Image 1 (cartoon, one colour):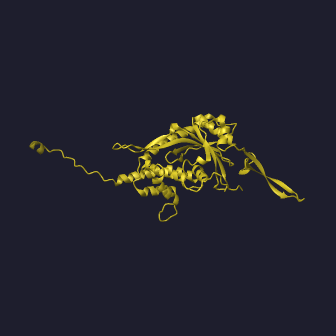
Image 2 (cartoon, rainbow, N blue to C red):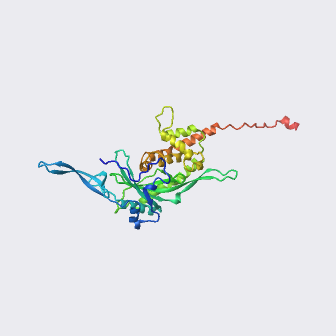
Image 3 (cartoon, one colour):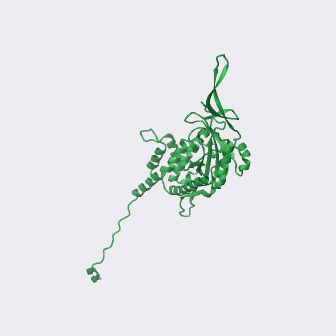
Length: 365
């Protein structure tokens, strides 16, 4: 069994400053496929993996030790001889340089701009195994958008909230898992992320890239998701949370609670607090977009005690699932809130309609 290890760069604070990945990577802006060696060194990715067969050490009839092959294999990180995953005889592991090379290739095909890459360890998996993730973030400024959260009235300046578009590439040295490319939004004010629905599963080798047409097809889905998000977020930014009960029902759906009295779970309460306390909360002015941003912020910066496991959860685990669920169901709650507001509004006063003048009235006139 692979033992769980905690990365040297684990941060124990309860709330992070900066981006969640700041301690687990480096800026690679301006570096390309001709500088992969520099990228690997700068981002602490300059290590390789090797596949080895495992053996059982027994004592032979003559009393001498005997190594019996098990026909099972493991993947070992060269720099420290750490076992990363079980494997099979036919499985070919992807090296870090191959993954980065493909991430850069994908970015080049679609016009994305790689700016950050690194590695982190998730030490809390279902099998109690540590997973080492390799990741790269590429920018897509063409699909950035800004929503207006307060209309201009009485000469006051409108409040705006900025969201930037990116591709999140990732790979883990775990048997059976493929590299992925996913569309991701970053809220600039709170430095938190939301990964959209699309997931491009990449089955790439260093000597056999998928056809560019396949990459362009996947990216077409990404573009649609970014454009759709811009429209939905604008709608959420103009929809106020008018009834506290609605926001609590939303948070209970995202963070289920076992409390029979209707109390929010601990994480649900943290998200409720974040609506007013997270960075840039004033920009969202208690709108339904603030509720979505709060769920994202809590998972990226508050929940848990270790930055590496928080990051893994936010991108690949329960945190990412809750963000995706929030994005799917929030429109339902925003609509319900709007309908309740309209029902509570006083009905307009009835206006009397003048009756047409009779023939007698006309003659009198």
